[in-house]
Length: 165
Image: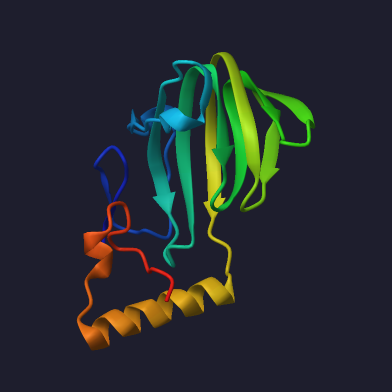
């Protein structure tokens, strides 16, 4: 099995993927306008590599000046490659991350990202194993399979996601 990266190259062995950050093709990754606090930040992102089990991935992400709230839906460890960002939690704890710094964000963490000029990072993402979420998703899939229910196709933004029962 070969696996394409963001640049469209195929890898004969998905167990060993090599590349440089500047070789990852970046595509527009708009920030939700409701999250933006200041400026007009423009983000781009690209996938470097997914894990074989689908629970982890490595991405390159960059963003121009602006400030916005971000909620991490997966665990994420970042390594800042270029530029800097001030990260502030809702409780007011603030840190400036710059080239060479590493930071970890737990699933569910909300933070204000304030970028003066530009920031580029490597993001190591991991889906957490939440048995309750997994069980509810499985029940939703079973229900739809048994009942032929396509409710997720009728609700905008939910296609392909398990809905609560």
